[in-house]
Image 1: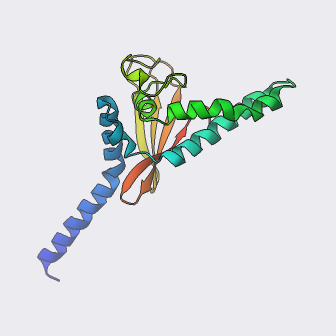
Image 2: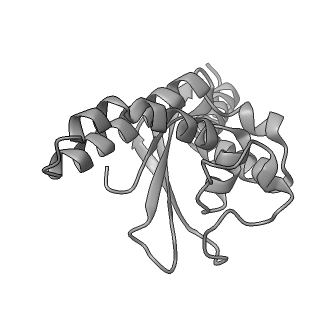
Amino acid sequence: MTKNKKLMLGVIVLLAAGWIYAAPYLAVRSMKSAAESGDAVALADHVDFPALKASLKASLAAEMTRQMAREDDAFAALGVAMAGVIINPMIDALVSPEGLAAMMKGRQPDPGRQAGAGAQRGGLGASEADPVLEMGYETFNRFAVRVSDKVDPKRELTMVFLRDGLSWKLSAIRLPGS
């Protein structure tokens, strides 16, 4: 192999490694710009909706069970059994392009609002300060974006992206306290 071919191969490998490293950052940037522009189709391209719904359903059910287990109430078991009735509308509000757009802006989606209703009314109920974003790899195939409020850093949620072939998809959301 000649020196030029080795150099060209080294440049190609270096470019491929750089692209593999930067791909989740580019996916997050693309999601953020889609959220800011209100492009629901572009936003939905970066989301694995079934995995995201399953993740949120498990997180919310576990949190509600923990909350109700602390109470010494005879109706706590009934509350746990009926948690699905409460959780499903909340998940539908969170796992929508509008709900994801709100989270990308550091705002908390409103489960009581119908899809699309928040687009005309501005904010979704959080502080107007820009959120604090921290991004990084957790493993080779898992990338996390932590969004926290500047005013209350304990209000943090983590969006987990998983590698899907050559692209990255939002597959889970870790709620505060989980």
